[in-house]
Amino acid sequence: MRRFSDWFVYRGEYLTFASATVLSLILIFSNNDPRLRTIRSYAFGSFGYVLEKATALQRYDHVYRHNRWLRKENARLMLENTQYKEAVYENERLRSLLEFKAKSQLELLPAKVIGEEENGFIHSIVLDVGENSGAKKNMAVVTSQGLVGRIYEVSAANSIVLLMLDRNFRVGSMLQRSRIAGIVKWESGNEVVLAQIAKRSDVSVGDAVITSGFSTIFPGGLQVGKIVRTSADEQGMFMTVVVKPAVDFSKLEEVFIVKMLPAVMAAGQEEK
Image 1 (cartoon, rainbow, N blue to C red):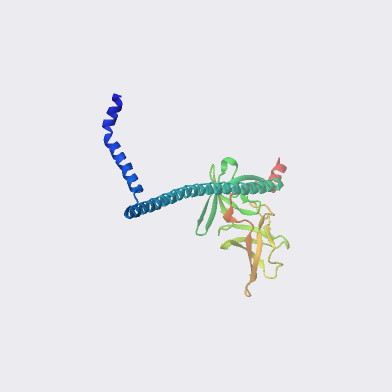
Image 2 (cartoon, rainbow, N blue to C red):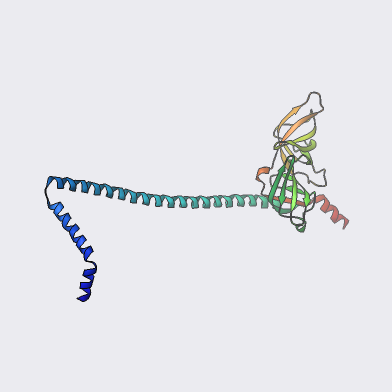
């Protein structure tokens, strides 16, 4: 009983205020005076307005949180989808490379492109293999689509490949259909030129161009590209033959280094 009286004394002011408030409300809402009815109406309207805004704010907060979750989930699904597609594309590339390696009679060393350089007329890529893996200067570099270039610089762990789209690159080539031989070289853009082709040669747009094999670097029969257009200078002896490379150099990721030519291997066996 003592504790209750102490509690009542210390909190008497709060109880008095609460009692007065409740009594005032009872008097206001029980009185039919027109002025009080107006006040009650205004109070109820204000309360309803505040309640409506509070409810709308609560709904907005819920929608905001839900949309934020949806955006996060959408980003996660997009990332998973991108990773899935990348895995599919990588499997397709690797399957194509493995099929090419299995069918090829060449000794091939797989390599991954880890860098590229395009500085003026210099076009090259960097591979993740070097002398430690058997790569050597001037070895040919290919993909399952065709010829890429040749190694012109090699270290213990890396190799730099001079691409076919470089002014210093040359390769003996021929038309697969008519067997007319020439020299493939780069002049500008993403195309190469088959040079030293006589005007009246049997050349047609769409003809495939392959390596001739008249080289100690490049084996014969590698796809170089296809002829896209020709032109002839009335004053000259040769025609201009423009070739679109078989390889898309903007999408190089995995390549093969040709470690040894079949002819060289056969000659070594004969010497033994």
